Image (cartoon, rainbow, N blue to C red):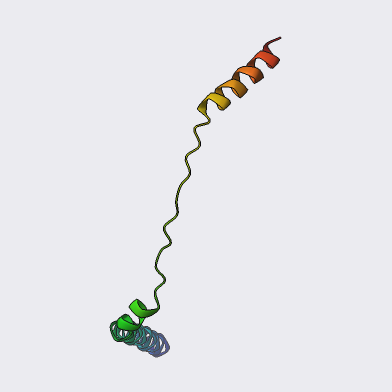
Length: 74
């Protein structure tokens, strides 16, 4: 029974160690994000404005569909 209690103690200590480490890591990451936020704005790439060209090829698509239908219906 003593070995089981020692195992449970070791498990709890290990789990608490991992939990504390993860909490410290999250805290450090949030701190670094706050510290480096001004630098991120400086180096952030601005999105490029793309001009979209609209192709009005609905008539061409309709003609192609009609030709395909006509070719397959014979």
